[in-house]
Image (tube, rainbow, N blue to C red):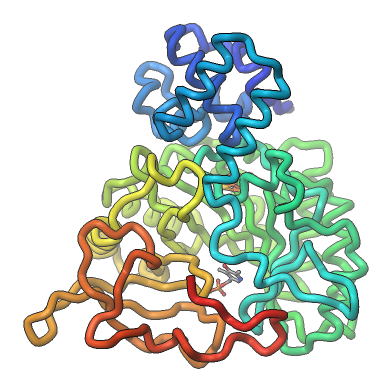
Length: 439
Ligand SMILES: *Cc1c(COP(=O)(O)O)cnc(C)c1O
Ligand code: SF4
């Protein structure tokens, strides 16, 4: 059966067939919150993933539809007032922009990761860890549907100064040819799987040439399996896409980094078929998601997801702590709670699911995992480690922070048994324009 995507945004969501179950107040909240937060959903999410009988607490609804509580009260009220007195669109837009800028739109110092090629700053590339280069192709800076928590929201909300994207695939390839230390590339966005197969091929086919023999692993970060599995089944270029995957997977390790946040996303026949089809090309699928209050903050949901994924041939990879940006106050959980959820889920599954690592914070210094709490000489501490570090020397060394039951992000933690964390005064990666700065 041919499936055509129908997308909904702030401007047309009232045409969603099931929308009548929402109250006038809910609709108004969406209209207002969606001016600040990303809002885009589609007919697959609304038709097959959202349970409209209990919509207010439905995780897929929460993941796709902004609501008043996702903004700070003062921001929401300020916008509501403007809308009530029928302020001009320009005035509302200015206020929206102010609010967005107050929401830490560019977390974890991503600017620090942008490299150069001679005089040219490569704004579509981030190179933070020596072996891995992230590429943001400009045609992939959208998603099949948008997540309300997303830290990539400057990408789609017109905050063009903060956008990471690159039109010129040539520069990306040139950069790779000059950096023999790079073994991994990660195509990310937005969602690169919104790109046409032929465009993806333009970026990726050249990597099969001998001058890119150092590139061993190609990863594509995507939420398309969760939000539009028909991408791999019935889109007009689905077959071309599968051929592209097969050719790439024959020459390199091809890994789809699939973003799954809730078991509902793994429950349809379409997603099962899409996973099987990708696996048939020889590509692997690894899975990751942030841990989100109101969406997936129960251990059973994670253990269920990991088991289902392994059964379907996917490899659980990361559980992230939600980033300190956008609607984080609505979604965040104390780090200690994150660890409890992770640990309870982890002990419910067999070793085959224990390829997963978390809870992990993408901090400007690296990916920091909370290993747990411990008592050391009568002091209660968090034990942490770098899974990935800006300076590779830091990787995997356990270190300590004072126990803090309220902290939701690394920047709120204080070192234990010392004045500083061990890595704070050490040099950054040599190729970076600026020295490493601790927030
Ligand atoms: C997560 C991440 C990577 C990949 O890290 P792995 O541990 O190899 O999966 C690369 N670059 C950045 C900026 C990342 O956040
Ligand atoms: S699919 Fe990914 S990039 Fe797109 S909105 Fe969701 S989290 Fe952000």
